[in-house]
Image (cartoon, rainbow, N blue to C red; front, side):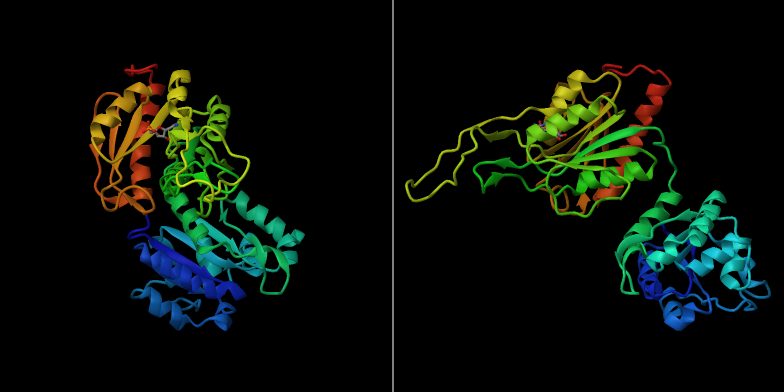
Length: 410
Ligand code: C5P
């Protein structure tokens, strides 16, 4: 997404300036060519040499610095850029830009550019909440400037509150969001993720090795493409894919079933990436099972509801996407599930393949549709896989909008 993008990283004079060094590293790691522009105050916190060494580009600080032959720096750079991100953005820089002041390289360049500008503010909580700053932020937003953060946390001044620079991951997610076409605008998407947890006794349970990564990637990419996403997940240890994705955490398959039924009516697309337990212990014991009395313990199991199958029966014109994680006869099993559960797409993966399935950041999948077409994908990151699945979904959305016949319930 960021490969070969020309990004201007504006750094103004806040204590969080040191964090923009890491932001620069993350941006370059993703293939962006970053040009750093610093205010005079920012140079009190960190030296241009650090940014220059890490970006491989000259750092621009001086209003009258020349760049690329005889052209004036700020105009040249403003012309070649794809995006400007100002992190940290101080109250001072927000105030200047909101009020049309262009008295240094950074403020002049913001005025000279026509590309998206993203501010990541960072300051003391009272400064952030002051009517001066809030009015300036509103003014900047009204002009089309975008914001990420600040977030709540411990602030450098010793207080706690809203004023902390957004995490680099969030800033990068926002940048990628800005570069992404919003082809899921107006679509409400329910994504299920993670394992389920079926209790045995007060301290034990049965679960599986799903970590939720694939479902989380689906949720993040759908939101990035403009969908309104609800994430229904089993227990997990991941950080939230985005702050603007509501998360409903459940334990058992039956809890997931009830929540899925609740959200289904109101959504256009369901992506069922959760690894739902097929069986649960028939009885949950009130006391912890003890090993003293017995050498063996037999656990009687009963079937859980098949959530996706039920959704397939209920479906009116929603698009249903299922997953088939298998260890043998992948395509045959996936095809049966596609038909039996009345799905529009099924994503099949052999979890025994290295790099595929549970607990890794990559996957190797085949996407089957209800027309019998199969798309085989190589080893890709789960984000990339999610994006390609969404490309297939968006084709179905368009077909549906055009009223084209589709072999199933449409
Ligand atoms: O039948 P199988 O469990 O292999 O099908 C996998 C697909 O069905 C996945 O999309 C999974 O989320 C969903 N599923 C479900 N309810 C179950 C079991 C699986 O919705 N009880």
